[in-house]
Amino acid sequence: MQIKEQIRKIAVLDVDGESFEVDGHYKGQARKASWYTVIRSSTRKVHADHLSSFPSCDKIRSLIH
Image 1 (cartoon, one colour):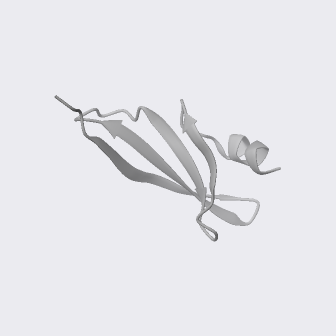
Image 2 (cartoon, helix red, strand yellow):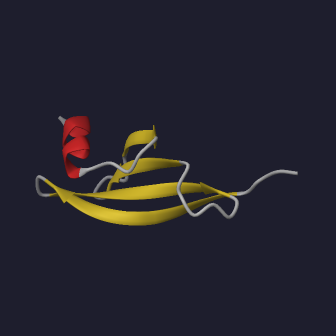
């Protein structure tokens, strides 16, 4: 039996004047995300994938600089 993964947008964060979306990846009916993805809203470019914890604004800032 295969467990279906769901992706949900959790937050949109403004970091240094740019918007970033944080998506949570959930397995089955889990209430906590298994991992997180950070996407720059303007370009739809993925800046971080498979983060084990929800990224703070400081974490996103360190990823883009």
